[in-house]
Image (cartoon, rainbow, N blue to C red; front, side):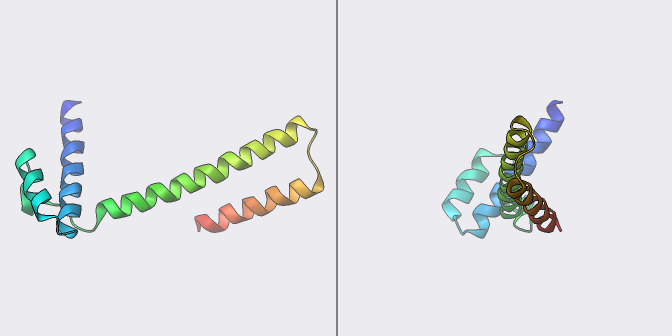
Length: 102
């Protein structure tokens, strides 16, 4: 398991180094290189941190939407199925989530 953790840390360090380089934080790059066991040429390519951060934000939004829908469905179950208006709202939310996933 140690090698997996080290591999993960190494990949994170490479992505951080790539981000620091892309932002021209030269002093930070040098300090980071001296604190890690990686070389400047080992930096990841392709804005991996930016992509991962965008993915995290998207997933957080989906989780929030799903939590809201779950709460609404629980409320409907608790109160005997809910009104026609709330059923329409759930249907619209489902359609919205499906269209956002495509």
